[in-house]
Image (cartoon, rainbow, N blue to C red; front, side, top):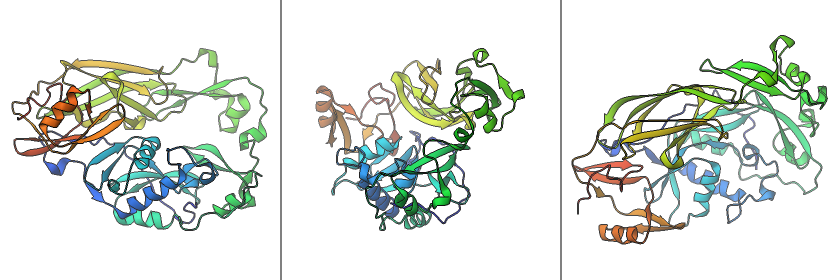
Length: 410
């Protein structure tokens, strides 16, 4: 595989949540677009994996998707099947699971624009973010991936490493041999000691932790721990910045607050979430969970306060969220509040066919009678599902059985 080696991008990423309002028309359903570039991308991506979804080691020589493939999607992304069904994937693992279960009859045919990808920028030697606004932009990206000219290297293991930067932190990429590194555009001048970063070249491995305090984008503080003073100095900190690590506190979330905005016809409402955080050890994202540990999405801490335009009603008297710093189950805070009274007066109809699941098996259901039969067997709905209310098609993400949408029109 080859990554982009000659393009320079001015990049940015924005965190948004795409959940549709029940009163909105089809125009408010995620704006999916058939995309030949997306079809090429996913067909090339699945080549890196075995039929069961496990990594094909021979196709992933560096172990870093941006170099072994070309780029990496920033999740979540909304994809469209060839039958116009929409699916949301929240990680590369989820995307691969989707792709290994496609077929000639059911496959990914489109995507919602815009979306973001991570790419390697050789001009800055950094992993950067690129916003894909249009099909033409995505096509240009794909054309510069050189999928048709894979690296032709032997299997000799004589590792060569290069140092790049991601989130202003050094990152070592290890190639099996110099051929693979050269194939990605790196030369001997780029090679570094595979066992050490530049700071490790300068510093001993003696453990004598030093902590420093930095400011997060929302104004709260962050404690970063270094192996010893040399590593801290190597990253630009001075003795005046050093703190006693024993006196620093653990990761914490405080002052979690919500503000309810406009309600949307019985299924969702505008919700603003804000909180303070500290000592996240450099983590830049947080996860937002609904009741029963259902992950709504992940967001950058820098977007706080976060406004969710269509926060889904749970169907209970009280709505609920839990906020956790990403990859830190011990750094969480939760809050409950009275749900807005948005009970619908009208019945709903399904836009058939819909999908239901039991024990990992997925079936397609095309009538109310079939729905009732599958529910009696223990099947559950696969969201999102399209409903018709008052002649309008809306997209819902939960709550059908809890009565959020009233009675079914039978």
